[in-house]
Image 1 (tube, rainbow, N blue to C red):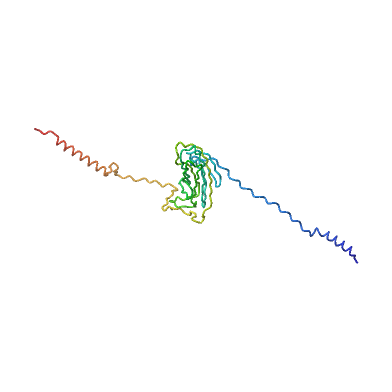
Image 2: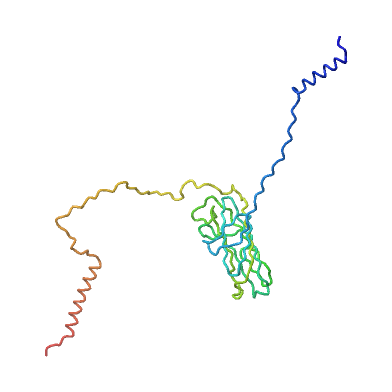
Length: 265
């Protein structure tokens, strides 16, 4: 009979031998999550164009800070997609009041790719700065950009838009004074289910299409007739009036000669 002490030692040896087979592997500690890379902020724009052809492109939420002078025309351009409602916020830091001699009228205009002026549904589009004002604020929010429109409509469509900032009225001696212009563009999403659609067919179908000739038609010379009347004039109304005028002139000359000739005595 096995003694209790030997039995306990034998059981311990068996447990030690079997422990590697039934041991549960330790769970690896989760690696720390890598933070998502931050989206770089758009670079600041410090220039502006002087015409539609030289307009400086800008992006939504891209800061624009430009130094200019009064009397300049400043142009920027941006792209708009269907369903967006572009909105502009402009702040103009004016010259010191001591350097100005009167009020100034500023205006912001937005044109589409066809250079049609688009209406602003909100915002101060043409404010007037008093002589004591230090800055003037302008704003313009366009109508929602549509994916299609009728030919006679002037609704905004997807494409490139142009922004023009200028002074409309000011004292002539205030031209050329330095100003600082700050501009911000935002394009929030509008009501995408309002009047959007897809232009599936031409608006004005061609009801009388032409025919494409793959081979030239054979030339058939006309038969010459035995009698040709090409030498005869085309008796039109002008010929009739010319002949009639000649006859009347001859008769008038004969009548005048008969009245003025000397009678025999």
